[in-house]
Structure formats: C-alpha cells, structure tokens
Amino acid sequence: MTAHTLFALDMIEPGTARKITVEGRHIALVRIGDDVYAIGDTCSHADVSLSEGFVEADDCAIECERHGALFDLRTGEPLSLPAVRPVPSYDVAVVDGEVVLIISEETDE
Image (cartoon, rainbow, N blue to C red; front, side):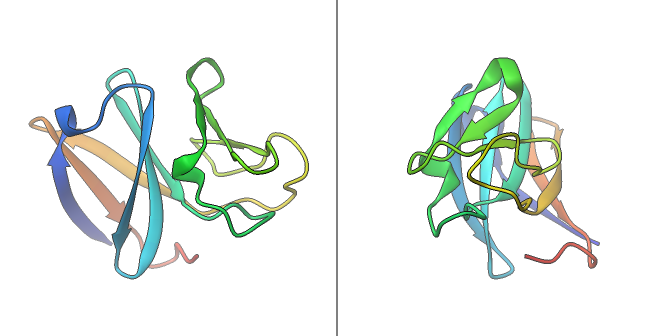
C-alpha cells in the first residue's frame, strides 16, 4: 500500500472533478462537500475521461460526458447503461487539510 499526499483540499472545488496521474494510473478525483472520492478516470464503455463529466452530488456519482454512463464514486460500479463494467476505485483521506490517495497493490486498472 502506498499513500500519496496530493494537494490541499481547498485546491479542488466542491462539486468538481480533477484528473491526476499517479503510478501511471489516470484517476478522477471528485469532491463532494468535504469528502473526496477517487476512481479510474477512463470510462469503461468508451475511452473518455470521467473527470470531464458531470458530478452528481446527490447520487455520489459521476456521469460520463460522452454517452451518459453513471458511475458510483464509492465503488466504481456502473449505475446506468451503456457502461456495464466497473472502473477501479481508490481510497482517499483528508489528513490535516491535505488530500491523500492510497493505492493498494491489488488495485489494478
């Protein structure tokens, strides 16, 4: 397991997403309120960046901008078609105001 301190929480606005690359993985970080979620950035239906999509705060999800597939930010599971495969999900914590991403060895994109 590897922890990566990324940036201060206030560097990402609530209700927005941001793409980062860590250990060669493209990851969408999404902030809802004071919580941050991390899932694989590439839609499992099409090669589209999820961080460019629409944050659905009430559903704790992000919608792919290309075809409207919705992904659960907690699990990476698809919540709507056309996506049927999940994207990886990662653990995130806010420690002393800093966003910390945790990548476990079994998480594979």
